[in-house]
Each structure stands twice: as structure tokens, then as C-alpha cells.
Length: 152
Image 1 (cartoon, rainbow, N blue to C red):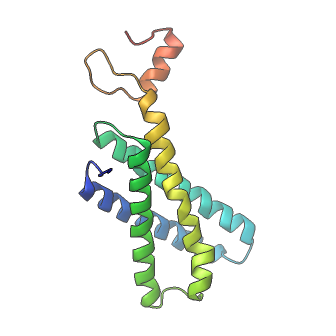
Image 2: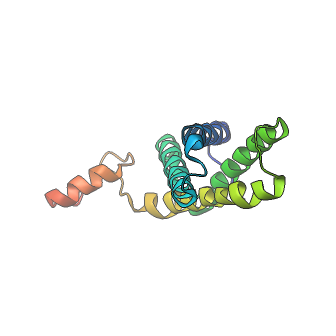
């Protein structure tokens, strides 16, 4: 069974993802209906960027990661975002029906576990440890590759 390394951080970062999505939605709200395809594309790109940003923050705070933890963290973040959205829905913040909310808005949250799984499971394990034993970042690995240094 997979347990997140930092359950408190998982919840707080899920809250951060939601706040980021609400902020983007509020900024884009005046443009909704002008060009639906562009509006939806910008929201989708923002969702991925926000999820990736919080995933990177999470990875910096944990010692290791795996695809299984990525799935769990992503599903939990999506659940936090969904729960908070439904709270706003109950307060009347959404002007669409519940069915339309699930097909147009909530369905996009499926991208969150995809981002976390890919980042946590398939990118991080490729980062070699530094000589001191601490985990090195991708930027240091890229610098080594340019310099021809294999990190040893």
C-alpha cells in the first residue's frame, strides 16, 4: 500500500492547486464566451502548469518518489480540487448545471494525476545521486551533460 510521504503537504498542495485554478479562472472570466476554444486551451495549459509546479515543489520536499505515489498524490489533489469546487457550487458560485460542471470542468481534473504520475514516477528516478549522496536536480544533471561530466 502506498502512503504519501507527507500527507499534510499533499493536502496543502492540493489546496494550492485549487487556489491557482480559481485565480486563473477569475482572470479569464471576462474572456469566457469570446473564443471558447482559446479559453479552454488556456485553462487546460494553466491546469497542467499549476499541477506541474506543485509537483516540483512536492518533489523538492521528499526524499524519493514513485509512479504509485504520483498516482495517489494526483488523485488526492484532484479530490481536494473537486471537493472545494463542489463547496463553491453549493454556495451558488457556478452558473452551470451539475452535469455540465462534471463534463466541462471536473473532467479536466483527470490531468492532475497524469502530471503527478509522470513527474514523480518517470522523471525523478533518472536523476543520479550527487557524490555527497544528496539528490541532485535536473538542472545540475543538464549542466554536467553539457560539460561532459557524468557526475562522478
